[in-house]
Amino acid sequence: MSRGHQTQEVRRVRTPRRGEIPGVVEQIMGHGKLKVRCADGHIRLGRIPGKMKKRIWIREGDVVLVKPWEFQSEEKADIVWRYTRTESNWLERKGYLKL
Image 1 (cartoon, rainbow, N blue to C red):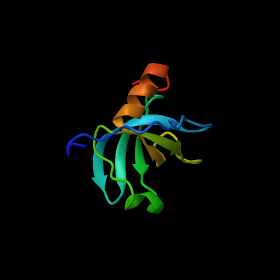
Image 2 (cartoon, rainbow, N blue to C red; image 1 turned 60 degrees about the vertical axis):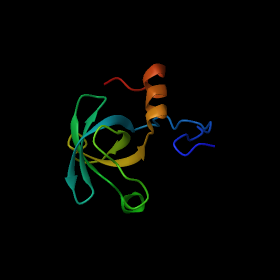
Image 3 (cartoon, rainbow, N blue to C red; image 1 turned 90 degrees about the vertical axis):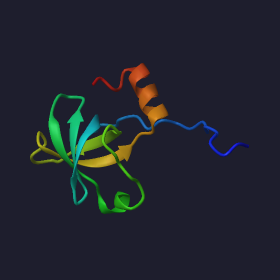
């Protein structure tokens, strides 16, 4: 196997559940906070929960799944999942991602 070639494993793509909205990271704010443009048209301040902080690295342009807060739901949300490029392409083809 060559060094630069990685095999793609087939796995299920996590689809948005009730109350979750896909979005694209626009800006990294620092201290585990991101500015996310959500599919419903709102720009929210996303917070990376502690259990995800060291495990997953999120960059600008990544497609993420956010769960808006109970209060201030138009402004703030928690990051629930980060999609890979292949998964985000699949979501776009299936109509889950309308950005």
